[in-house]
Figure (cartoon, each protein chain N blue to C red):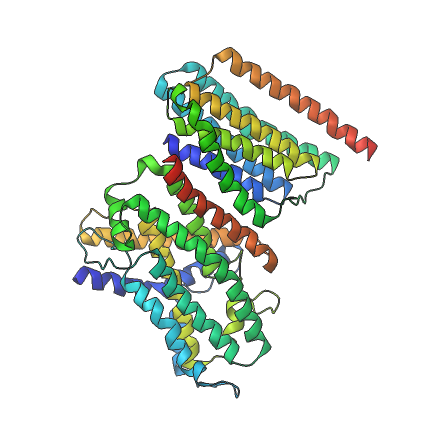
Length: 197
Length: 306
């Protein structure tokens, strides 16, 4: 089940890389967070870790529903460009994405013995980190860059849950507050951009 | 052996029904008065009675072409994974052979398109070649990856192995292969994101453009070939990616198999209603996604083992 959810997580992230429409990108981000939330709840109930179940539920509410909804309303309100074409051409992306995955596997190999659980999950998490970075890099508009940033945070959450068997509750709550701060900053940034342009 | 022949008969008979079901369902969702789901059979029966007219430019290729389009598909039909536990099956076809047979059929279809001497046949053939060239690598990779997970390179045995030992440890790569194969199912059968089977608009048509000059029995054969191609893909999809329900008694297993085929048709209809047709030069993006997922499936299986 964990394998399946991690696969789904990576699949939604990769599909987001090929998306050329903003609302579709928000949908993929939402599905990405949805799989992450379900994964955290599943792992938490298996490890009998109430903190992880709680953070999974918060992920479901905030990241799968709240943030995409808010960003969509914001982009409607500000009239952002909805057509987002990646800068990296599709031919190169086809080669780049598998290359990233293989690269991160060898990158993660030296630390694999330090991980309690399945070492491959660490490799997948780091590769999704790089893919989220690619999502930020390949767009020129601000909105997809924001989604890239949020996906990166998702990848970090995945790394935290799968590699360590659950971070302390305090750290995860801290991350959530950081995220909220980031959304506030993004809001200000977008409004500022609207004023200057 | 009886079960094997029965499965073949069911697949052949159900083929026009699946396409009819897709069409009827789409019309119902769009609040149109739906066409009958038996329309495929009626069309074939009507075409068999019609006079056959050939283009003046047409050579012998147009006369033998339709049979050569149909023949590789019928051969491929013989080697599909079994629908029930103790059914007879032939396990000689692997990823390359299967893709090759389907490509052979496409090749003769393109020849028919070129042979008619009209410009429409030419554009149809060139577009089909464009799409087929992108579909083939992804298809080889996907089926190969699933066969590796199943532990047998033959497609028929792979389907059976998957039903016995579902690869729970390789769910991630299994999922990637499934996504890739579904995109290929849409692309290779000319369903909506790639080609619209219902229009005769010159900007968009691919499959229809090639068969524009055919009539009568030749058109009937090509239409049958198209429906058989869909049933091959649907049957491969359900045997490789939804491998359950084989262990019951043969009748129940066959019923479940048919139910799964109908389910694939329903899903395709829903996808068709909910997506817009892609511009022709955007099609490589979609097929690029398929290739990436096929690649990833193989890489996650080999390198990550997930």
